[in-house]
Length: 215
Image (cartoon, rainbow, N blue to C red; front, side):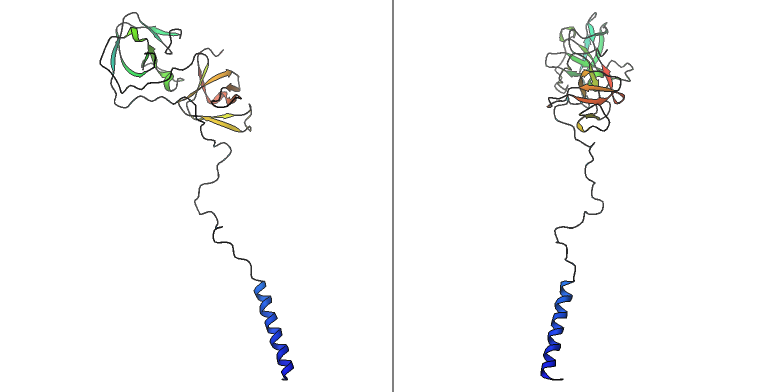
């Protein structure tokens, strides 16, 4: 082989090597790895967390004991307010105080069937003047008195939607055991006030129960 032919052969070989290098697929960056097996899926549209501002679900303090006696003739009420509907009249009844409000009303479990009531609405209330004196009970939780009017009770976490439709975006979630103020009742969708949001929300009527003047 002549010197010229040898030079041509070497040049052709180098060109072939470069072509092979350019045909290799690019390697993915090390930081762009695929999701690990078993990683949690992305949040679904209906998995919106409960917005702050919903009333805290009520739970009695574990192991607390605060006995009191309700004076004879005292009116027991369904909510901690003098204008709330009466539940009945006491006759020197002994109770265990489970909750108290800033104004002094005390709540207790009347031990009656209350299938539809949830959380704090399972309690009945006595005004402070209608109780006999007793030792201090610091373990009894201080609770906010539910407002007057029609209230919606959430026995489980309840989705609140922007519009009265099942495919409407979820704007909040009422925690189980909490409640909401009803703006407008309805046979299918109920309009409620949403804490921290100027616009009302909508809850499926079948998912909740009610207390107060809701007609």
